Length: 483
Ligand code: FAD
Ligand code: 2HG
Ligand code: ZN
Image 1: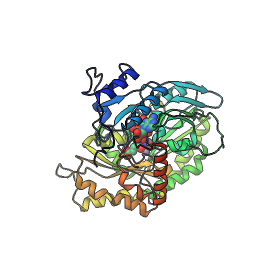
Image 2: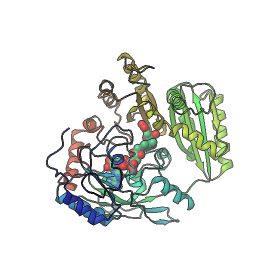
Image 3: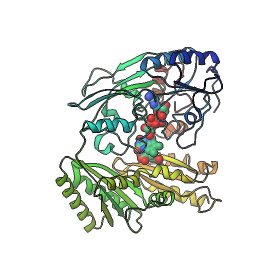
Image 4: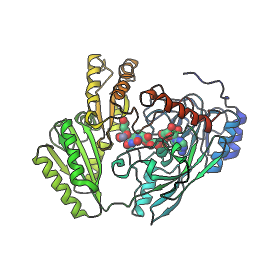
């Protein structure tokens, strides 16, 4: 990949324009100005430390008008930009590839309004997910999305990636929950579609292009979103199972017996739990080892009713030997503790040096097969082992079983071309063979740029390119990524 010479190099004159526009403390400038305010490195490298750009300028606009002025100037001067939220994305989409200007939304943190009757929240894109959820907790509501990176990801970033997360099973996707969007196009146009209506059939639903668009056509500056009532009764169970077949049986039973109160059904293989234990030293909830674990969450409005249902469910699955062992959280601390066995996996897998991550949608019956097939492949290639001579530590699978979304993770001691070659395009071909998707919820970013054809037809890619060209004719928005 080479830097495209159609983009201008940044000059001290450009920097002066931005500094005058934004004022002090709202930009990080490296080497082009004397009043550098901050370390630029964290904005240039991604969460996995796998992708690293070389931007010299990070801009932190404080309002939609400032975003509009920045983009208009960049568009007129052929300066490429990367929109950035909390920089927790997992496909290298949120960092520059070369010297693109980073536009980080961290200063846009206003909660604009909340309607307690409809549950509709309107907030700036830079609000951190956990802060939005804490705000909603005071109003007895919840954000309809929850994920392990909640402490740093931003709601604008969540919408730009169409993040799925831990409760999609219950609350559905952001394509349904986001009711309106305010965004800025590269030419500075403010797309004022911050609708607060549940129903609105008045022509094309253009906001959908920004949801999951990964910052390739504009910058989202605010969203309006439908937030459900917070459940007063929350229960969590964690159990061990002897086979993937039994996990599927447990899921069927959970749907049939817990039905409307089921709010999450997550899968963790035994290896992912073992590595969590090895990396963090934390004790696992159950004695003994099981090849698979599932975590179930229920949320409802009547604690006695829910507890009774969940207890009956657990009795049934244990008596019928679907589940070998299980534990039910008794209080808030235990709820958090059980959840951390699931949510802590992505972070702990980085412990050995790096991780190759594949976020796959696969029909549920064969969802776990890929993990075994990839492990066999690593073994045959002599890449996996316990000592430093082998780059691969292990091959694990976990994820959102309720959504048929598996996270295939390959923790490594170092990023290694031999490992990458053994994985790609093998994994993508495998998924294509099952009519799955090579990106269930993380997006394409730069990681999957060459592979979009495994999940989308030539016609679909052509239509996407037409949209990209229409909204961003100069191609300044997040270049070198999937389109
Ligand atoms: P960033 O990483 O900053 O950006 C992501 C992409 O969106 C980039 O392409 C960027 O250019 C673009 N972007 C960001 N903000 C804007 C904006 N305002 N306007 C336009 N474009 C923008 N994802 C899931 O789907 N489910 C999970 O369960 C999940 N769990 C995770 C757990 C951990 C520990 C981590 C590190 C990540 C996880 N993710 C998960 C990945 C997920 O995509 C991100 O965490 C989150 O949605 C990205 O938000 P962000 O603000 O960090 O965006
Ligand atoms: C999760 O579900 C996230 O924990 C991250 O989507 C998955 O790191 C991964 O592969
Ligand atoms: Zn996930």
